[in-house]
Image (cartoon, rainbow, N blue to C red; front, side, top):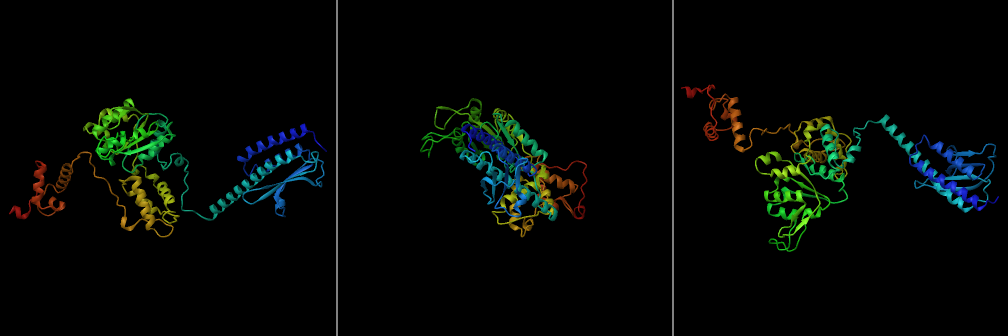
Length: 485
């Protein structure tokens, strides 16, 4: 039976809408909803084409495949009617299916109808394959959970992916990341304070990547790595002939970072003369190249980092107070590793998974004794030192179990407290006084302070005199038998 042109257009339009809705459903389809979706699509196809039945099955049909056949049949229709149209659907995985529609009111089939059934058949095949793979994955996971216990912990890395290579879930780290989220959308200057190896540059990049400047450049400068004679040229650029060796004009880091972010690492080592010029850039957005009197304007967000106590540097006159207040609009303090030891397992496994292929190693277990030894260490180098220790252990280990290098055992070290002294003389004075007090100010005889310190008694007396150490009045001094005689 021939159909009018308007009738074919209406059928084609209805199939187009069916293809659109099916494509949307396939993206979020699960194994529990597959059968319902297939039944609905087959019914819609059959009713649209006025067919007696429609099927979707694997190709070629086998005894096992017949159990996977999906069929829709019009009530009261004869299922013995032969298929009037068969549309194959081939998947990239190698599996094939066929969409069959019985001869019905639309025969002979116009090309416009067949052209629309082809993408619909591919969508159905994609849905079946995805659900089959999902079921197989769930089956394998279930078998592994029942038959084996993996020593590799499974972490939810959603938060870590969001913050690039910043790994951890400890409260101290999350507090710092929360401040990153607060300040990132603004253009405020930031000072990141933290010990060496705590990841100050990673935090600076995280701020930049979440700011409105993320499409622009992130330019980093290590102020401690440049000599004072070159750092001004490095930051602000120079003109040709400005100094010996300046054979051509050169842009500085501020110009390169225009409309982006400039990261000044170890800002505490910036020379005083450069601090004044940096302050002007922050306040007015203007600067001059070395050897030029022409002012240039830039729009740069500055993120500074330091391991020093800038407030103490300001009090001692080593850092400009006005520059400190201009930079430290929103300070962020990074916790050292010893204050977030709960992140140790995550950090260790992160580095193992990152480096084991390059080192030609494969690890499945990190013993509790290794984690205990790592937790006892003070970690003056923080995460950078931890990665060094883990990589050394990976090279040293044999088999799938990580073990620490015997020659690099980690002592439970603790830093010398320097809150009450800062110079070398203060340290020596504190140490000598502690030894003298322990020995009740005995300088001679068995168990005296000189013996503990490994010094000759006369050498100890000389150093006491030099450092102004005097025995407190009323303290008991026991003399040796030779002295009493």
